Length: 225
Image 1 (cartoon, one colour):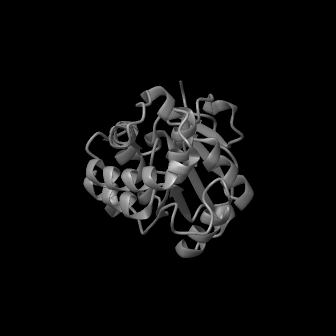
Image 2 (spheres, helix red, strand yellow):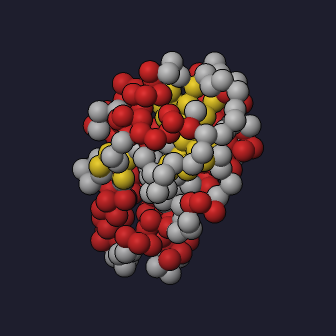
Image 3 (spheres, one colour):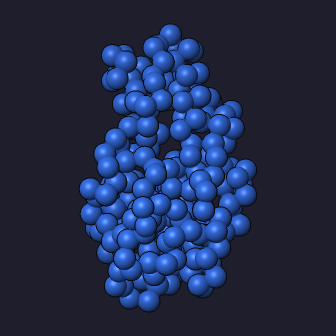
C-alpha cells in the first residue's frame, strides 16, 4: 500500500521516533521474558498474539495485564515485576529484529537536518541497550524511556519534555510511531504524527487512529515531509 499523501506542517526541526513496533520488532523478547516469569512463578504462559495486544503502555502495564489475563492475584505484581526485570535484562535484543527500511528512514531524516530522539515506554536502560545492540544508537541525540518522566505516553508530557531537550518547538517536531499511544500523545502535545502500519496497536487497525499519515516503512516517511 502506498504512503499517504504529504500533509501540511511548519518546517520541521526534529523527529521523535518510537522504538518497539516502530523501529524494532521486539515481540520475541517480550514473550521470552514473560515465559521466564511464568515458569518462575508457576503461572500459565501467554500466547504471543495476546502479548502483542498488551505491549505499548510500559512494562508495569504489561505485567499487570498478563496477571489479569491468566487470572493471577494482583498482589503478585511485585514478584512478577522483579522476575520480569531480571528476565528482560537477559533476553533484551536476542529475539528482536530491526524492521526493513528503518536505517534508510533514519538516514533520510538525518540528511534533512532533523535532530532525532528515541522516545519509548520501555525502561530507558533497556532502550539504550537495544539501540546499541541493533546499531541504531548513533542516530539519536536523546533517548528517553518510560521511567524518564512522571508520566508515559499517551500523556503528552514525554513528548513535550523531549522537544525541550531537543530544542525544538512541538509544532515543528514530528512524532513517528506505531500506535494510538504515540498519536494521542502527539495530538495533545501539538506535534504532527505519522504512524507505521506494521507495529503494535493493541489489536486495532492502525489506520483507525487519528494521525497525519501512515507509512508501510520508515523509508517512506521522508516523502511525506
